[in-house]
Length: 104
Length: 316
Image (cartoon, rainbow over all chains, first blue to last red; front, side, top):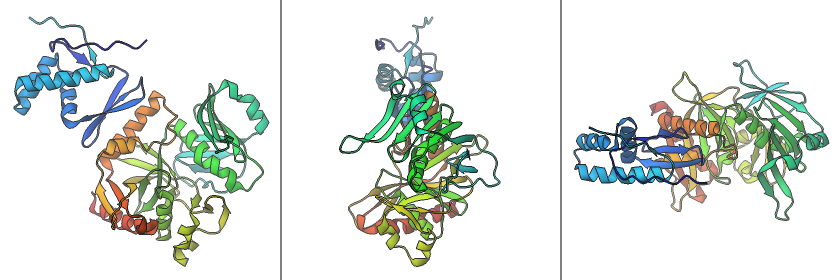
């Protein structure tokens, strides 16, 4: 039975790249390979930058703050774009939501 | 006889005329190729124990080419062209070839069987032809009918050495920056009209026609080594009047779509293919060449030669 995609209800969660996913950078895009399906997926340069930041960030919110600061963009705009990207990748099995993080 | 093709050494128990003889290079992974009995192969590799991964038929429904995946490897056969079994690691091939002129059964051996063994030995395969220019390989990628073989032949007629026709084996060298292109075999299938457009001196480089079917088959000398891949061209058509050569956009999808033997879909192979494509994108100048039909393969070859020499000499 296909795994049900998770819904991103909060950006205060960490995401990670599953073991069955590999990605490589090309000149103008990044290609993600899902080894479970054998399918390739393309990311443009902006989305690839987000993914790079996400894989090392503690939470998606941390990634938003970093990207917004780095590129001088409003937090709300970056948060919306990043949420959309992450949800799309989660839906395709290319990204996993980790268990909620307790922040204090 | 010890030959080589597609980045593997082939230790064969029977003569294969158009398989290049191994020179004094460093050793490649070795594949032992042994003569076998066709009925024995059918018995040892029964169709009902395999899964068809290639099943091409003629318009009347009769089989043209069948490849079955078995637990122990692959069974490849085509009526009148031979029957072969390839071990799962690519190290052993058992071949039953029919009593017909060698170039006929070599077509199946060179187009499917040895490339399959090479892929199982870790070589990455692309649907491409290539020639050697100034110590490097220049490759042409394109769909069937795009003119890869014809362009390569015209470049050979202009003085380049053939690297491979139709199947290009590549490896990423761990301690090097680039990608290496491995030579194929001497058998080349050419549209007879292309032979007619060559100069007498150029045509002489190809020797006699070995046989004909849909194409004329000839034996052409190939480079006796692997070479660094220096440039890559995607061939296509345009509706204009001139040949256009532009840096390729959508490079990743063009490269990933040029895989040969795509039924080999293990995780290891998929990652390797992605790695080789990424390395090409990083280190090899790649261009899309589109030409009007009127330019002909001869015109395209001349344009590629001039462009590739500029790329190589310019170091970009």
